[in-house]
Length: 66
Image (cartoon, helix red, strand yellow):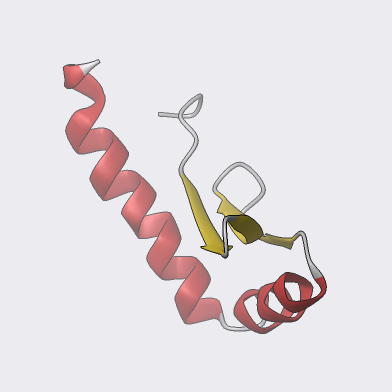
């Protein structure tokens, strides 16, 4: 499970604003708005914990399908 990466991207108007990457364990912003959202979400430990749990639940469950 170490080499599997869970990515959750947020887009607006066909432009990726920010992204959560399980390999980094935090959000990264790509636009001015996305940087603000990434800062907010990175400072909220419950959001980070939730997405890390999603990685384990979603990726581990589907690993046999690929």
